[in-house]
Length: 304
Image 1 (cartoon, rainbow, N blue to C red):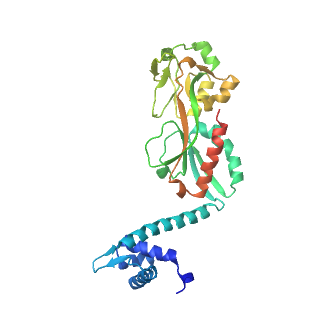
Image 2 (tube, rainbow, N blue to C red):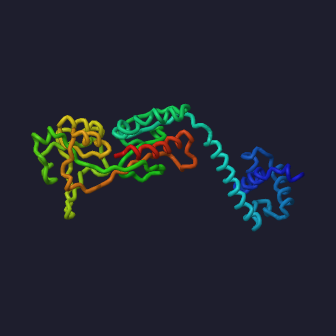
Image 3 (cartoon, helix red, strand yellow):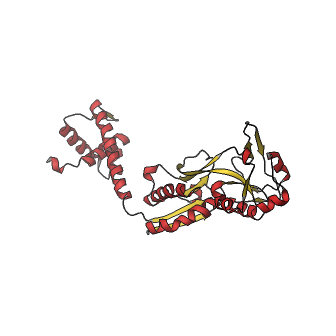
């Protein structure tokens, strides 16, 4: 057989499968070959290489030193071939449906306004978008991507950093006019503090003065809400004080609809924004990968 007619990748695949299954008979089914044909192929391979790759006994196969070295090279080469094929496949126009679950504030103020640009760029992609501040399990929820802020729980999910935002305690001028301006964090105990109705990683509001004094206040008031956007709307309506990410209230602060309070006590904490997805990265479907790249490119630019 001429060298041009030898399918080296196929030979390597057969050899690696024989080693993995520890026998010609066991390798026959996954390869779709007979044990006899596999044995003959390995013999031809050994003859062409001029080296014994396997010690054959009635009970098992054992790699020779030359066979072990060849096996390691085969694994690397087959992996490179797989990666090359995957990259070519991923380079095709992304298509298909992506299910996205985003926190409400991020969705309303940043994700939804960007979607027309994304959909125009990728006309063969369809999006299912759910806005919810409830923590979801991507596998149970059948979501491809979840966009979340704050500390991330330990999980097997991969993550892509999209940006970061400071946090501020805010209220409407109308609320402060009748309730008074808090000077010290303890003053909040006499105010209507708007809280969230679901459990968070850190529920208390942290404060630190310039001397390093630390105070933590648990929000208490007549009203708790299920998402950050509702919290913002109630603060705008003058129902109390809220602690929100600056990206969430940047336009309200600029327009004077909300004002920051207790800025001298702001600890300067930052909330990171991540896209969570099932990884690892190189095996992410093209439709999901282009969305992650798009969000990483655009969201950080939009944040104040």
